[in-house]
Length: 219
Ligand code: AP5
Image 1: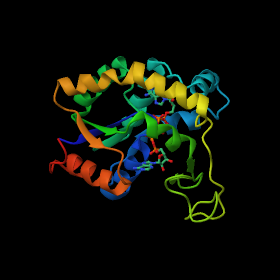
Image 2: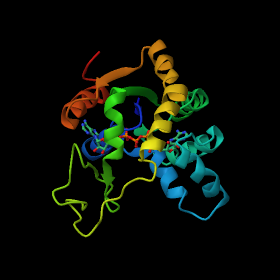
Image 3: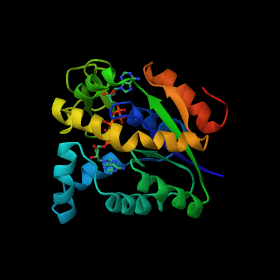
Image 4: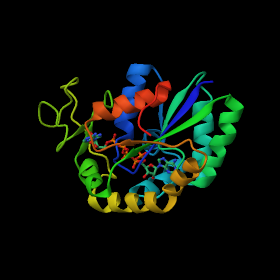
């Protein structure tokens, strides 16, 4: 049975970094609800108007909007895929259970575990390439030349609008209140696997790859 790999973790834990590695090396498509919403909010539509202030404030976009987006986007994938940023609430988790049954897939939740005190620097220091999406960090993973992508020197790196101190604090609070309870939900059915997200990205990836391939990995 193919898998829906659900990468979980607080904002800035490294879900996007790991999802990109999984996509590149195992060929599993990455579906990032944050990326979908960032593209959507640039449009001139009533939905974009609704989504923009929510993201700016670090809150969650309503479940009905998210469920529609995920149902539509995952419907294009024949085999397994990675969800980065979904589910984030109990109704989203319930919808994913139904979707997995409909699609004949199993759900593999993986928590990238990082303590709160590290997360703010990861987000405030994050920069990404507008061309290829490569993720850098001015503190932990700087590009070779200031503010340009190593692979696309013509492209100035972008700083996300929600990666400022105030919004980061709100996003962390939203995670603690609304998404953290989902970890207990997946733990209760013995599906949740945890990896220590404080190490180098390659060490974290090695654990995640083992879990995805069903070759063991930590706990
Ligand atoms: P989203 O884009 O999903 O943001 P997030 O969950 O806050 O996660 P991030 O993208 O900030 O972090 P990440 O864990 O991917 O870390 P990354 O790999 O980039 O969501 C944005 C907004 O959209 C939400 O606030 C909400 O409003 C809305 N939204 C999205 N999904 C929704 C849903 N389902 N329901 C409702 N609303 C939704 O890494 C971060 C930084 O750390 C980078 O600079 C990276 O280089 C660095 N780094 C990564 N790994 C390491 C490492 N091992 N060591 C050192 N540095 C590292």
